[in-house]
Image (cartoon, rainbow, N blue to C red; front, side):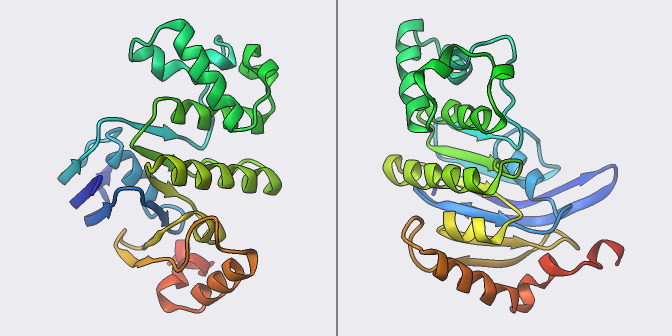
Amino acid sequence: MRLALERIGHAFLGRAVFENLTLNLDRGEVLALVGPSGCGKTTALQIAAGLVDPLRGRVRRDYRRHAVVFQEPRLLPWQRTVDNIAYGLAARGVGREERHVIAAARAAEVGLHPRDLDKYPAELSGGMRQRAAVARALAVDPEVVFFDEPFTAVDVGLRRVLQDLVITASAREKFSALFVTHDLSEAARLGHRIIVMSGRDGSILVDRTIAGTPGARDDRAIFEMVQGWMHEPAFAELFDPDRDRA
């Protein structure tokens, strides 16, 4: 086991987000965490990644390095792409030449051209900036990667390309990943397991292994899987337009 959240409780401004949240992330597992807006899934990820301290409960981590890919690329605008990708390596004290070699290799893996490495973030398209953010996360050889709805703002075609990059990289390098998404199809493509959080109290409504292997599920299998989920009572909150008014 790489990560465990044990009976986590958290609140904002006195309003409880969730109580007694418990979940585990195994070695080499991609866990898709879904739920309606406001259910606390991003807060759970932030607590798991150590970005937010929970009010109650315990987080157990059995790894040395992790990385985070956010909704926005969060590249440093005054640094070239190569230095943005190598940022974590520089923080670890890796020499300039070595970290640039690693950054160039990671950039190639995510589909960036060598000429893009000398560009500044403002010179890149939105999709290229998000590719650079993924490359930056992978550059430090993490054992766990936290993805916070990273592909929401990109178009459908690029989203699929980036999903495939995650699938390929996780299979190759055996890192574990907690992948927050609001898209059931994305969860079905990427995940080994899916957890659905309730928007009413942050409790876990579903925790199940997804049939098949990420990367081996074809479009028809994913479509049929999601259609089946849509008819399950446990998934109903995801499709309830009146939930926020309840």
